[in-house]
Image (cartoon, rainbow, N blue to C red; front, side, top):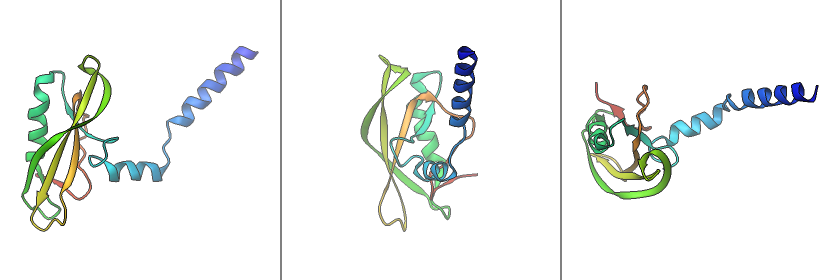
Length: 130
């Protein structure tokens, strides 16, 4: 009986963790790309493609009204663990993004190690060119 109760408890706890609070989900989406905890993931199975994937992604962004953006890599930060990195880890790349009319640059964080998800997300305030 104790074994069955234990299994039911584990199943219940696991199912509770799969639902997200809508406010937390909204916060994560608002912070996508601009918070190192929610970087833009652009990697692939080939580690060599990561830097090019970052540039391809950036080249396909525009401002909220279609403004042409400019960007510059400003360094790396934020070490994290990943089986796809070198020796089990990676660093995020930081890019400064600007466009005419922007009051202050947007800093975007990129993970070039882990495979990009199927659904390509865009940071709040930017658009993906058609």
